[in-house]
Length: 282
Image (cartoon, rainbow, N blue to C red; front, side, top):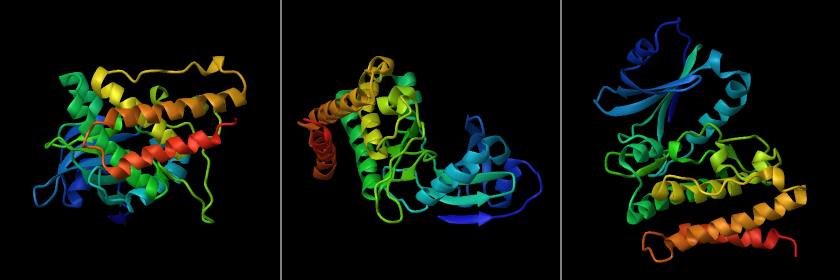
């Protein structure tokens, strides 16, 4: 991935893209401080371009989350992850040129076409699990896994994207890091996150993964805990431990009879299950 930092006068985003050899087309989506275009490069290849407006994003995002995201996306490459090819850093905005997934995100696709058949659910979910397994082997956690951040290509392949809340899971000494930043959506969040407690970012990813098959098949994310009724921190930890083991076993059962689940993905889920079994107090 190439990165260029340039100082430009305040001209339009489309003109800036044109200066770098990209023709901006329609707007794919707009967020609080970002906009996504479909763009065409000089070879006529279509890409997506996410433009982040610095003045609207806030200091915490610009100084903490965005640099972390750019560092991570520069070092990952997987067929089921949206690839970022170039970053253009200007005084006003950051432009991220990445894979264009023609069929959009899964949430919008399900809303338009309805839930998937079981075999399609398995195929897409397996691809997302492969992507997360790859990230965790690099000690990277996504922390915002949801249907809106899984995208479909024209051929129907799934790609995990939007690494705005991603982070490394180990410090420079190789020690595991816990997180306390509230990330993602409540429907996909584990109870300890909703309670504002420290959490293991990789296990948060596994919790969020559990919600995807239900959304694929039934259009709902399933159980949403009322954390206010759980009481003490000890009860929260025990609840999370039990629910995480259950969630992993549900996912494993979902694949048990399917040839689509490769050994690495299956073993990754089993390893998380075994770890939470060992952590629960007798």
